[in-house]
Amino acid sequence: MPSPDIPELVLEAGRANRQYWNDLWRYRELLGFLAWRDIKVRYKQTTLGILWALIQPAVTLAVFTFIFGRLARMPAGNVPYPLLVLAGLLPWQLFAAAFSNASGSLVANTHLISKVYFPRLIVPLSSVAVALIDFGVVLVLLASLCAWWQFVPDWRVLLMPLFVLLTLVAAIGTGLWLTALTVKYRDFRFVVPFLLQVGLFLSPVGFSSSNLPNWRHLYSLNPMAGAIDGFRWCLLHGEPALDPVNLGISVAMALALLVSGLWYFRHTERTFADLI
Image (cartoon, rainbow, N blue to C red; front, top):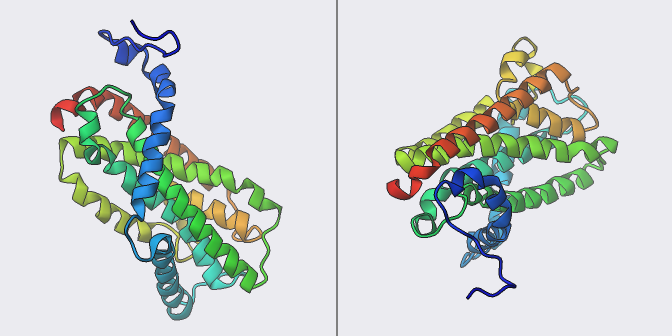
């Protein structure tokens, strides 16, 4: 006889379809456990530990500042060029880490997928937690540089969580597509680093999108263009100016990726256990 204090989960035909979103809430503790496990494993048995979250953006900052700031002499307005680059790197690092972690999460958890029932959406969602930890570390680096240049953000910084959300929506949407495709076609494990390399240069990380006035509408089809512009607007006293039309295009694209990613993930989810 089950204890009356322990909630009973009944497995029945068709339950996964009828009760999926309720089950996602019922298994929220599993999501927290998987997220905490990934955070602990991330830097386990490493000498530098969480400093690795600083090394990559610091090196990228130095390279981009030299190439775009010194050689190409891209304008940065009234903002020190390193701050312009780092304000763009901040959302890009969050996107890249969340996208990369989510895209390989199902294959990395085959021992769970093939043995027990739970909404598989929990796995890619939990993998985003590590990206948020790294985001916090890079945010500390940005705050340090702002203090160095005596550049204090104004009231716009209060709106930054909205652009964090936009970044995560874009990352989860694309991550759901890739994690479902990777289960079926393992070749996509090699596609992810390539997409991130290309995406880095197709996003306004090392320069301001205002330097491309004739291409901004087309450029905004990349949802990270709107997210990066939004971060800079929040952190750099409204420079460059935020265009509502371009931002709307980026938000629409991010939502389209999320909705289509959820649809494809749910459409293929029933086959995951067999393919893994």
